Image (cartoon, rainbow, N blue to C red; front, side, top):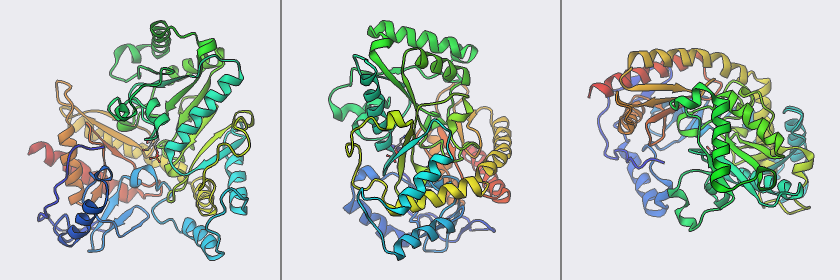
Length: 459
Ligand SMILES: Cc1ncc(COP(=O)(O)O)c(C=O)c1O
């Protein structure tokens, strides 16, 4: 998250009044300050750092405050509202459960849970025979870590080795942070898991990675095994891969992942993809890993899985998913009927409502426009990453130095003009509108974005 702090002193900003955006107050709104001050007073600062907009209502691809301002949302909160904010079908499903009422069942069965599981499994690739529901994404990656190790031990492995990847991120619980690369975020733990190792990421700016990705994988894994004295037959249970690297929407070259798959199969290892940001149509396919032409054993899903309420899941084969003993991997809120109703309505909307196709088709236009921006600002934008309705622009100066501050300024200025973008706190800006956005609104948001880059560079 950002170390940058946004201005909390109201400033005059030009009025905006279009079909999709409205700004008619100072920003931040002076009347919103007492609410923001109370947040500061009563809540851990660890939750803070976001732009000072107090959301009152969010519908489709728009976010509203209580003072008449309206934004186009290019964030989907944070890759969550793929089916659109306040999707009417999700609300109807949630109201159905509320009206029964049936708000909690613990792990007793409910029809909502059965219907959702059946739909989920029938509409995902055949290797996913069972699922397990949780609330947060970090629980799902943590669960995949356990499953890979359980399977490893069952297959006779001597060590619970997991290979994760440089620069990736998997959540904030302990196992997830061990698999994540951010060293600072692990300081609180006080020790490192000796059986979690990280491979270098095949960034497009690493020449040796882009010129021969398969060789880059082979060389990297061999170097790691040699350095750590690892024997994959006995010491390695699985790979944990963020489907694309979050901060910059950086994908691996497919040949890298295909080579990784060969290695995993040869040495009896599982492959898990963390699909938190990539899943549920975001990249123009149901799951992001589908761009690589490989078949993972496990996927960890969250965020866009419900477009709303807290829900996450792990999907895998019957054999692997049934490794934990009866009752040993549930949690109090797992498979709550409320979240299951939302999950089912969301998935139906994404699959049957044409949102994957919209993401793919509009994604082409989206990336065409973004690449025009890269051509227009070659001294500031070095890469446009992503596919479908997912993009990250990476800002570096002509010497390759990161322009993080410029990204913060652009993000804040977009907000003042009625457009919300994902502020990463790094040299990237991420864009991820709800997948039901229209072409007209997408293009309006992109023109605001382009003009804001132009104005911010001039300053
Ligand atoms: C790739 C990835 N994995 C895991 C997580 C953790 O999900 P949650 O915040 O729901 O625990 C996130 C959240 O941002 C994520 O982007």
